Length: 304
Image (cartoon, rainbow, N blue to C red):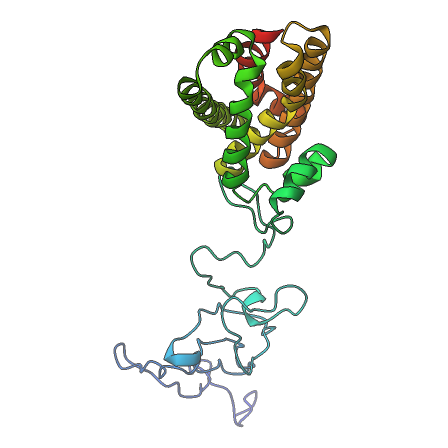
């Protein structure tokens, strides 16, 4: 039969043979075992996925998925708080890792902040003996107040103030006449009561100065402030008192010494509060203003 070619032809009604595919019914797929990545896709590289590795003590550290595989395996994890900050760069400082610190621990901020009411980190120097303390208040007050800001000086303060009160009676004209005219049994209680009164007055005025300094932002302790203020009150008025005992309170020399020693007391009180409470001099002068006015009105104006 002409026009027809007999041979192996192609049947258009038949689809080309396809390779058999594996059919897997739903519910028969087995999940990968724990600790291993899923099966890699056909024809591709295995995924770079990091699974949690158990840390020391059996507890794992949280690690995050790294699609690019840039995290480096570690041999040993450093303990918490020592992750190599400061230049080393440890395991805990890598991106994707967490670092735990204890309550109150601040490894990144090592500077200490000075807070009001808190004790200083370390004394500025050794405790001065009473002779060097009294000499230092006159010759080098700033250094002495700074060195003694952490030490109580109750012994020298009470003794010096009590002796100052005994002599202060003779510096007041009316009180001196009463003591001189009185008999010895009557004069002794007057002099002793004057000494005790000056001690109590020094304690109260020193406490007021310390309270005002704390209200203005000071951070010093109350015992050194009160004790040193009592010493300043007694030492600064000693020159006027010595002349007043022999010359009387109305003498011109005694009056000039009274104003000069009052100004010197203001300078020493300002230096004391400034060094003991870490305050600038205007605030330190304001904290000691009540004590200065009280000394002027109670002690010095009686003779001036």
